[in-house]
Amino acid sequence: GNSVTQMEGPVTLSEEAFLTINCTYTATGYPSLFWYVQYPGEGLQLLLKATKADDKGSNKGFEATYRKETTSFHLEKGSVQVSDSAVYFCALYYGGATNKLIFGTGTLLAVQP
Amino acid sequence: EPEVTQTPSHQVTQMGQEVILRCVPISNHLYFYWYRQILGQKVEFLVSFYNNEISEKSEIFDDQFSVERPDGSNFTLKIRSTKLEDSAMYFCASSEPGGGSSYEQYFGPGTRLTVT
Image 1 (cartoon, chains in turn cyan, green):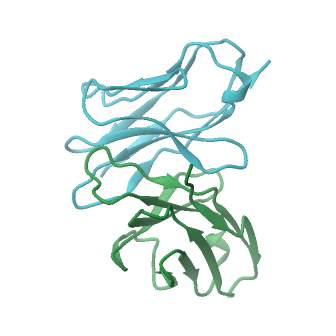
Image 2: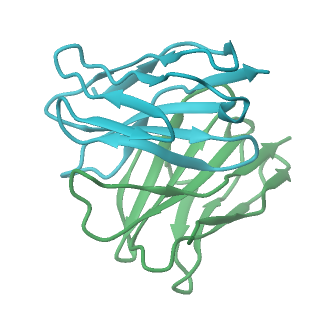
Image 3: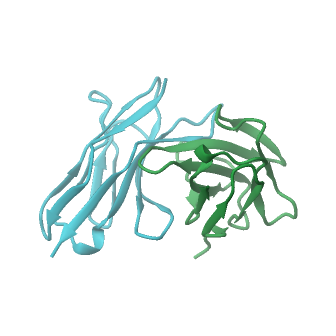
């Protein structure tokens, strides 16, 4: 079946460090891929998305490229800030007969000053 | 900016009791969803709702669960007889009509349900 696998957290970084959070997926066909972020005490917010192979989603300095050959959608940021501390969720959406999002387990990022 | 709201933020209930979790989706949205996240586990899809009926549900969404859009603005999730394993964060989401490959769901802040 369709699934998403994320790297285990927590990820602890110093401010201005480079961030990578790995995400791989299993799916038939061509899903859309998303990264959601959950700041403490808040709901899930869409961070970025990509709808087809080789698309790059970007927002707030974060980027992720839809790699069909490796079935991956890794999240990267060149220089993290304390305010980026949150839980990050990778998700896929199939569309068509189903409207549900399939999420990974989430990765907690803690950025220290 | 429009947002999805949920009430209450935290609900504590005793096993066997009924609970109703409430959500107000974004006003022009037509698709509505409930997801849940048991502590430390994945966010899991429960149910989707469109045109006043369930369009899809997961195996988690058994006869103890029901959803309703009672008045055109609220969207509720009822658990008829709660179990300890229903303790989780419950997220409501909504999306615009149309869908397609660039489909986006907007999430509320969640209701933490604790069953004792």
